[in-house]
Length: 56
Image (cartoon, rainbow, N blue to C red; front, side, top):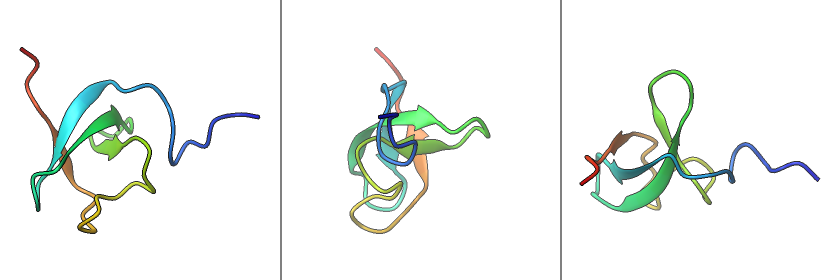
């Protein structure tokens, strides 16, 4: 069975929700936006906007 593109995959970055600050492993969606892995594509607060945190 193929992975569900809405919920799974390998993390590419660590991202932060711009509304509440929660942190998730995220993937780039190809348009420059980020999608959290393991969710329906949104934060628990309902936001679907994430920014990648700088790597150390």
